[in-house]
Amino acid sequence: MTRAPISVGQLTSYIAELFQYDDLLTDLWVDGEITSVTASRAGHYYFKLADGNASLSCVLFQGKARQQTFLPEAGSQFILHGNIGVYESAGAYQLYVDVVQPTGLGLLALEFARLRIRLLEEGLFEPSRKRPIPTLPRVIGVVTSKDGAVWHDIQTVVARRYPLTRLLLSPTLVQGAEAPQGIVNALQSLLAANVCDVIILSRGGGSAEDLAAFNDERVVRAVFASSVPVISAIGHETDWTLCDEVADVRAATPSAAAEMATPAIEDLLAVVEATRIELMAMMRRVIQASADEISRQGGVMKQHDPRRRILAARSSLDHDRQRLRLLHERAWVHRQHAVETISRQVQYAGMTCLQPSQLAYTAITSQLRAFDPLRTLARGYAVLETQDGKRVRRAADLQGERFFDARLFDGVAHASLESLTLSQDGKQ
Amino acid sequence: MTGVAIAQTQADLEQILAEGDFERVLGGLEQALELLDGGALTLDQTVAIYSIGVGLSRKAEALLKAAELQVAELDMIVDIPDI
Image 1: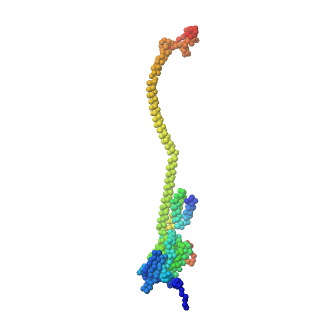
Image 2 (image 1 turned 90 degrees about the horizontal axis):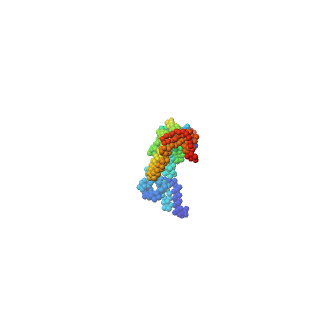
Image 3 (image 1 turned 90 degrees about the vertical axis):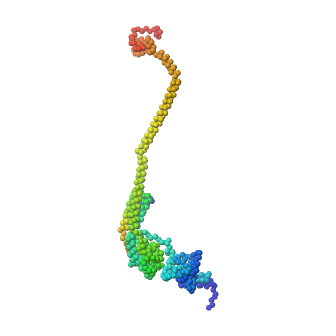
C-alpha cells in the first residue's frame, strides 16, 4: 500500500507523539558519563550522556536544576532520570532531565531522590509553612509502634519533663508493606480525635528499607495535611527521611522529640518563682510609690500649715517693725539734724536780727521800770485798799468804809477812817 | 484599661485561680503581672490583683509538683478516650 508523502513537520510531530505515549521513554533512568556540559546564562544545562557505544543529548532546565543536590559535571558518571522528547526544530530527540544522581545508588534511593524533588517542587518542604510547637501542650499524640522502645522512651521523657500533659498513643506498624497505610491511618485517627496540640511521629533506628515507610508518598502527604504541628523522629540521628523534611520539626531521636514537645518542669518552676518574685517586687514598688505620694502630699500639706503661715507673717511683721524703727530713727536723726541746723540758723539770725530789738527792749524795760508801782511806793507813796480788797482810787471809794489798808513799799498798814472830806467836784 | 475592664479581668483571674489548668494559671499569672505593671490600678485593686497573683503562682507550683503523667491509647475501633 502506497502512502501519500507527509511533511517533515508532520513526521516529527508523529514521532514526538510516539515518545509521549511510550511507558519507557516517559519515565526512565539512564546511566552514563557526562560530557561537554554547557550552562546557559538563564541557568539551563545542556550536555551529553555517553557510554562506549552511543551518546544522548540531555537538557536540565533551570527550574529543575534548582532542586538538585548534584549538578551535571563533565567527566563524571551519573544516573539521570527524565523523559525522552523530541526537539522538533532540530529533528533530534533528547532526555529532559529532572533528577541528577551520582552512580552507585540503588533503585530505591533513586526513586527516593526523584520523589523528593517532586514533593519539593510542590512546596511540601517549604520552610515558610513550618509551624511553631506549642509550649504547654495539653495532649501530645504519638504515632509509633505500641511495642517498641520508642513509645517507652517518649513516656519516660515526658513524665520527667512535663507530667501535666497527657500522652495519647495511636499505634501502628512502622515497617513493612502495610506500614505506610497504617501510619496514615494512625495519624488521621489522631487528627479526627481533635484533642492533640502536637503529634510525634516516630520510629527507632533501622536499615534504609526499615525506614522506607517514612519515605512513602502517602505518609509524607498525610503529614503535610496534618492540622496539628508534627515532630518527626525517624531512626537515628544520621537517618533522614521525607517525613523529617515535611514535618514541622525534625528531632534526632524519639527522646529528643519528646523534649521538643514539652517544657522542662524545672524551667517552669523557675518561671513561676521568677514571676512570684516579680509580683512581690511590683507590689513593693506600688507600696513605695504610694508611700512617696503620701510623703509628697504631707510635704504639700506642711507647706500650707497655718502655723507656718503665722510664723511667716510674724517674721514679716518683725521685719517690717525693724524696718520701721530704722526708718523712724533715720527720720529722727534727720529731723534732729534739721532742727539743730534751724536752731543754729535761728540762733545766728537772733544774734544778727534781734540785736537792735534787744537794745530797744532794754530801753523800753527801763522806761517801764520807771512806771513800776513798787518803785513809786519805794519813793514813799502808798496804795489804799478797802477791806474787801478793792483799790481806792478816789476818796469817794472810802465812803461807808470804817477800815482800810495802806499798802506801803515794805508792808501794809491797817488804818481806820476817822473822817472823809470829798472835794467839790468830786474829783479830788 | 477602664475600671469595668479591670473588674472583669479580676473576676476572670479569680475564676482561673479557682478552676484553671496549668496553662491558664500561667497565663493568668502573666496577666496579673501586666495589670500591675500597667500602673492603672487603684491601691485596692493592686492589693487584690497581687493577692490573686500570689495564689496563681502557688497553684502553678502545686500543679507542677503534683502532676502525674496520664497515658492513653487511641482505640481506632472503639471510642476516642475522653481527654
